[in-house]
Amino acid sequence: MTASAQPPPPVDEKRASFEREALVHLDTLYRVALRLTGNASDADDLVQETMLKAYRAWDQYEKGTNAKGWLLTILRHAFINEYRRRTRHPETVDLDTIEPFAVFGEIQEDDPQGAFFDRIVDDEVLRAIDALPEAFRETLVLSDVEGMSYQEIGKILEIPVGTVKSRLFRARQLLQGKLYDYAVNMGYIKGTPA
Amino acid sequence: MNCRECVEHLYEFLDREVTPELERDIREHLEECPPCGEQFDFESLFLKFLRARCRAQGAPPELKRRLLHDLFGE
Image 1 (cartoon, rainbow over the protein chains, first blue to last red):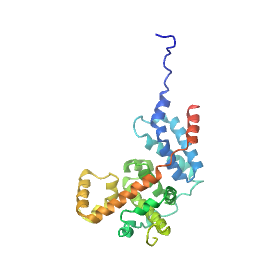
Image 2 (cartoon, rainbow over the protein chains, first blue to last red; image 1 turned 90 degrees about the vertical axis):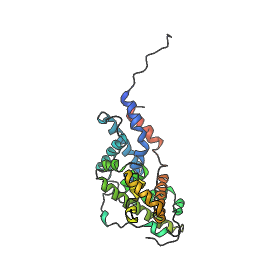
Image 3 (tube, each protein chain N blue to C red; image 1 turned 135 degrees about the vertical axis):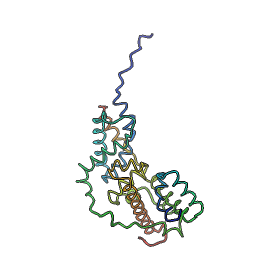
Image 4 (cartoon, rainbow over the protein chains, first blue to last red; image 1 turned 45 degrees about the vertical axis):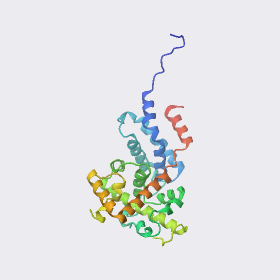
């Protein structure tokens, strides 16, 4: 035994498990916050607040379950309670009146592989997502960007799985329509904007 | 399965949210029906495109630093 042998430092279990299970989802929280608030400064604050709340409530989280879903639920509640009022206005559009536009029907002759998508850059796609009604936007982001299941999304958004499906269908069709219009206007593809 | 039923489950299929039986029926239909196959390929490419365009963004390093400081006093 050498004189320099020291007992290991006391392990801060709370911190270690929080880093392991919660902080690894920081990028996801940030991307979702950005799409909800629409600007980087509010997204920063929203994520900060979410993580601090989560750390305070960490004892209530059952370790090893679904930390990503748990964190996103906290984030969404914080957004609704504190940010939505001053960033974006709550939904005023009637989601049922929005007609989806079938892009595949338009392009199947000339570009069935959707090659025109390759010419659309990141910023343009994010802008189109931001222009979706909030209920569609949050569903689409959780599914198509973050890869969550219908059930997980339903739990976070507090809606039935059937509603997740129908919102997702319409969100994707709407977004395709917007990107198709953009591609037509840019001359990437022949066609008439929807 | 006919084309209408197949397309009705298009996104659920691509999202891997269908039962194994339904998945088998859809795959069988897609093999015999090129138009439905094309539509499924298009939608599948669209979803991949979307994910690729949106995943690049992550939390800024400054936010990470601020968080570690506020959480653990670092």
